[in-house]
Structures are given as structure tokens and as C-alpha cells.
Length: 183
View (cartoon, rainbow, N blue to C red):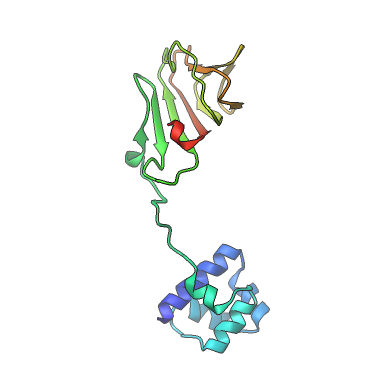
């Protein structure tokens, strides 16, 4: 039980951006005592815990009922990213398995000569991205621009758009689009 209280307290303090020393000073508990509580080596009395939580501030009830664990996968290896691309274009989607995903965050790779298709694409939402390496020609409506490393874009996806790599090197970019279900 003291391990759980300590882990919860450490997670809450970290989430709130408060150092151990700062929290100890705020609540009048020694830094070493607070450290031992967070390590699960000492179990605080209810009154000590209330004193610590009052300095955050948080009620004892909220402290024990707060959700500290994400129900969705948080971290992904390169192999766990789902390829949503077609043809030569690779769209590695981060979080494809998250049912409540609110956006599509992708690492896109366009080999030389690859594009999103001859037809322009349009859908509800917004899209933004930044080129990591290579070059990409982006057409948004009647406007076309060639972007290189470090250059970025942001547009309303209701406007017809197309991506194409006219260069001789692969292009890699990171993008984010809404709604999530567009991809």
C-alpha cells in the first residue's frame, strides 16, 4: 500500500511540475521524509498525506481515485507504426490502434517520382507538416511550392491538394492531420 501511495504521490508531483524540495517546503515536511514516502519506504499517516496534498492542492479522495495509467498504448517502436500508404508512398501512422484518436500523426516517405496520385485530394479538416529530408512539391488549390528540409506547411484540407517528389532523393516529412479517420 505504501508503494502505491508513494508512486501516486511522485506521479502527481511530477505531473504538477513541482520538485520534491519545493513540495517539502510548501507542506512543512522534510525533504528526506517526502523522498522516503515517494520511494515507498515510509507510509504517511492520513494527516501527513492530507498536509502534503493540501500543498498541491488536491483532496485525499481525488488522490486515490485519479487515473495514473493510460488505457491506450503510449509508446511505439518503428515496427509498430502502421503503413497507411499506397503504391511507393509510405505513410507510417502513429497510434493507428487508438480507438479515440483525434488526429492522424504520420511519418511520410516519398521515393523519387512518387506522388499522392494524379487526382487532387480534398476532405474535411486541417493538415500540417515539416520536411525532414529531401524535397516535396505540394499543390494546394492553384498554388504550388517546392519545400526542402526544415520548411513546413499548414492548410485547410477542403482545398484540393497533392504531394509529389520531383527530385532524385527520397523525401521524408512528418505530418499531422484532422480528422483522424481521414487516414
